[in-house]
Length: 106
Image 1 (cartoon, rainbow, N blue to C red):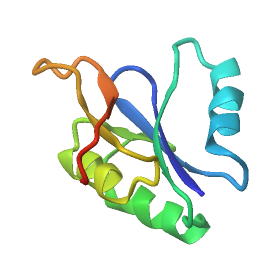
Image 2: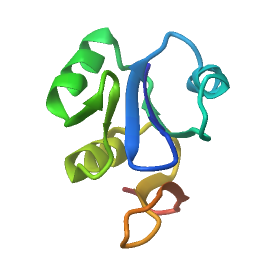
Image 3: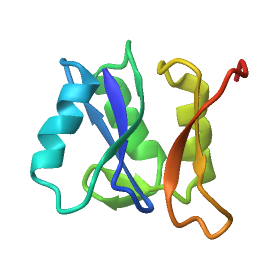
């Protein structure tokens, strides 16, 4: 499973886990100085897809990527297996990524 986690700011972690992405969020949160948020996941994602995504999007460092990359946000919104959610910026200043609940079929 591929997961997308925000650091509450402008960075998004793209990672792989065999477990529940919420458990992985909890594991990562224990070592983080800022709150982390699950933006979404791809249920059928594997290590090969993780590597492909790491090569496709703009890195900040290791497994963290630039949330200002609209292609990354578009990818998350298109392939996200979280039900009825949409990832976008809270406001025009792009100060915080959020997950919006929606009834729209995206």
